[in-house]
Each structure stands twice: as structure tokens, then as C-alpha cells.
Image (cartoon, rainbow, N blue to C red; front, side, top):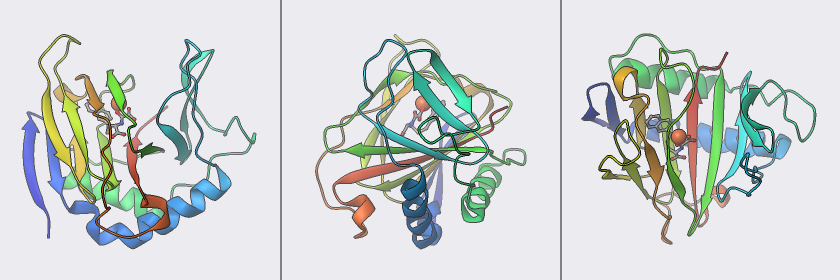
Length: 207
Ligand code: MD3
Ligand code: FE
């Protein structure tokens, strides 16, 4: 079963919460990235990001030379993003409930792929802070960096494993965060998608 650990006033880790959805999640991610393949987006400054990304749901997060935005279509194909699988929406809604937050119905799921050595530098997430963010870790473990409301604030290191879910709401929604370079290792479950990689699903409400 799973366990809940508070990491802020309105943020918590649900250790192992995603494990009962594992088969569904892996099968669905594989189907999504066949339609909307992982790609390295460019920052508005023009540099390719280390993390490879795809999306599902009504809106997908995108970045290119024009800036960041949510898009209803995949700019690579011109087609809508693959639909959000019911199991994804159910997991996100149940995680928000387990975190004792108001009902959460995500309409955007960003799928991040980290290969060994990949990191995500400390940043703040834009978006509607009335809605929480739910994040699901799969594959290789990683150390999440959890900061404050200013870039210079001290950071805490939070190890995240396959099946862990983190929920951020309200006052903790704008805190700086990042991911340390992913180390090589063996994933807790054998799957081609997770071979030498970490996959993170990030559920949001976009408008
Ligand atoms: C903490 N992704 O996609 S989990 C991102 O593991 C992102 O792939 C990381 O940061 C990952 O933007 C971290 C998601 C996350 C999202 C929003 C947050 C963590 C957050 C907002 C506030 C605090
Ligand atoms: Fe982020």
C-alpha cells in the first residue's frame, strides 16, 4: 500500500501511490508516444532542453523560440494531442483527494523523459495556482530539489522512486523546484520505456 508524507503546508508525497496503476500507465504512455513522440523542445532562448517531452489531454505544454504556452494541438503533427486516458485522470483525481485538496480534474498531462545524466534546472511553474499539480514518477529514481518562493532560497533534496506521486497546491504551488542529474541504475520494474530512464507525468489544469 502507500504512505503520505507532508513536505509543505499544501504539498505532500504519496509514496507508492501510482503502483496499482503501473501496468495501465506504462501501456498508455507507450501508446501516446507512438502518436506524439518524445522530442527535445527549445527554450525561448533557443537552447534544446535535456528532458524530452510529450503530452496528452486537451492541452499540452510547449516551448519554442516564441516562448512557453499551452497548445491544443501538437505543433509537430498539427493534430490534437492524444486524449488523456481515463486511468490518468482517475489517478490524478484520487491523488488530490488523498492530499485533502479540492476535487481536481486535469486537462493537461506533460510527459517528461529523463535519460541518465539528464537534469532539470531550478525553475518556477507558471499557471493557475487555484489548481494543484500532481506528478507521478516512473522508472529510475531521482532526487527532486524543493526550494522556496525565491530562486536563492535553500533547497531540500527529496528522493523520488518508481510509483511515487507528489501533489502541490495553494501556497506551495509557486515554489522553485528542479531535478538533479538522473543516475544510472536498474528500474524497479522491467519495461522498454523505463530502460535506463525516468518518466514523469505532470498533471495540470490549463485554460
Ligand atoms: C513543485 N517536472 O515539468 S515534478 C515540470 O520531475 C517539472 O519532471 C519535474 O518540474 C519532473 O515543470 C518535477 C512536477 C512539478 C510541477 C510543478 C511544481 C513540481 C512542482 C510546482 C511547484 C512545486
Ligand atoms: Fe516544474
